[in-house]
Image (tube, rainbow, N blue to C red; front, side, top):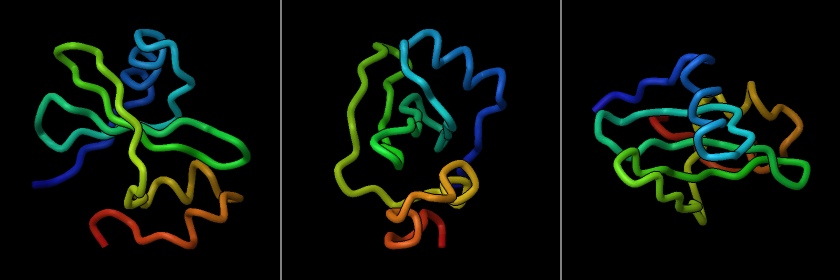
Length: 85
């Protein structure tokens, strides 16, 4: 299953809907979407259920290749494997 990154417009719409500073968002083809937010000098991964707006936070995520672009100074990006690689 491929991963699709949301457009900037869709990402802004979800950020407003959830009240979170979402920097990037992805879909795996189902109704649970992954996202990243800035946090403590780095970033944090989460997921949202599009049916209920329930947010969960990932404890040990695989980073998306876009994490390096969105958060170039985050040491966790270089230290962890990337999704799909």
